[in-house]
Image 1 (cartoon, rainbow, N blue to C red):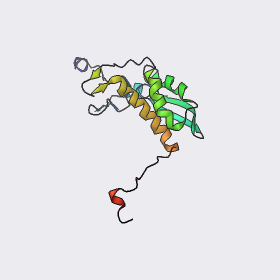
Image 2: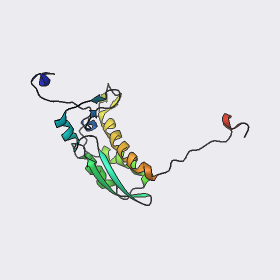
Image 3: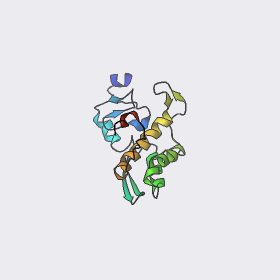
Image 4: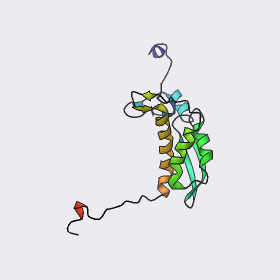
Length: 151
C-alpha cells in the first residue's frame, strides 16, 4: 500500500475488533502479521478477551482482559454478573447487539454476514470459552439408532 511505501506500519482488521497481537479478521480472510507497534496496541484493544469468576451456576464477576476499541466488551462485562452460565454467551450477544457497535449491518460479501454479527460472535465465543470449563455438555443418544443394533 502507499502507507507501506512511506514506511508507515498499517493493518486494516475487518471488523476492527478482530485484531489480536498476531492476526486479524475471520476465516476466510485471516491475516497474520508481525508489527510490534500494532501488536502492542492489540494487547489492550481488539478482539475481546475476558476472565470470569463463577459462583455456583452463575457468573459472579467478569474482568475485561482486552476490550474492543469501541468499549463494547466493558459494556458487556458489566451486564453479565448474575447470569446463569448456560445463558452467558447468548446474553453477551444481546448486550453487544444493544451497544452502539460501530460495525456495519450491511451484508459483507467476504463473510456472507454483517460485520456486526461477526463482531458479536467474537464476543460471544470469548465468553463461551471462559464459562465452558464450568459447564457440562449433555449429549443425547436417541434409542433405536442404527449403531444400537446388537446391544
